[in-house]
Image 1 (cartoon, rainbow, N blue to C red):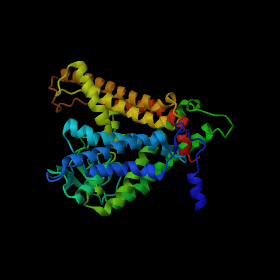
Image 2: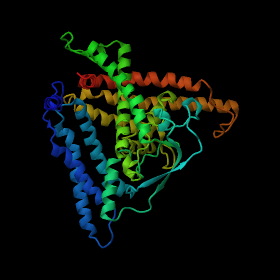
Image 3: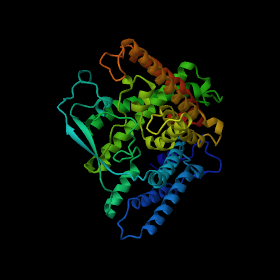
Image 4: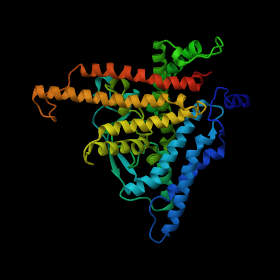
Length: 459
């Protein structure tokens, strides 16, 4: 066992961290989230008998220290035995620091908002789940994961708490819930820019285990096999002693590797989500046991690039992209176009969200390519081009629908005459899948260069 642990934790020779960084220590990993937690306990208002200035002072000190430590994590430390964990360390550091700024300075001072709990209630529906092809289509975890029919069909409603925690016990629980909720699920921080259906399902522990064993793990195994095959046969320098790059692959293998990497990430996120849901299921009805769907539509039901990023991919960073991308993007568009605050600013919204994602992921790549900026731009190109692609497809869609509306002489809200055609979904799939894979090559190229593909292949 000691030899296995030593082999797993031995420094990777292909890791290229930022020069000057040192291996991560337990203390450096523990302090940022712990101090952030202490600050969160002091965030809800205290009764008047407490010294408000003193509480505000300690809260601000804790928040500033936590934010500093989070931002410092990827700039001072790396995980010596893993390229992937070093990449994730950068995401954690950047995400954590931005979350601290949002919770203690942006939301309270700019929007006078402290996150409140949102309690979700599930009312049974009469719909009986049967075979997938015999049921009405539903954007649900049940549909996505092919769970067994014993999952209950429910209608979900959300009720926001009127007050904030007061007692120390409730504060401690509230702070832990908020810190662990990346998406803001269970709080008013939940991203509301994409509305999902209220008709959903409540999978049991058995349902989730069934999904893991019969669907997630096999899909993960297939993606792993493809990644390993391409790496060993075409990219491994030990095969002929020559260093090879992503661009040395034939175009078809570039697309195949890109698809396998995306599938690997999607199934790995689903696996982690289900495992944590199973582990915390005994805590029901405590909010920590609430695990809403990670993906809300099956990949083959997606018909546009916008659908993919809205419903087909996880939204773990949605709050970060909302605060640091969507809102600034909307503000810029309104300033440039003279739009009022009640007018939609969709171009700025989309471009701002994807631009913030480009920065976050490129910074993570920067920490595993030896701090070379040019080698870390693949993620930036990918997300920026995805944003442009969504603007283009929405523009074309609007032009086509306006043309059909004028031809049919119906109002914009009148959908009864059927403005959609049977071939719209076919054209949508022919558009978004090739565009996503072609642009995804920028992402895959950087991961090959960083050694992430080598590590994912088990080499």
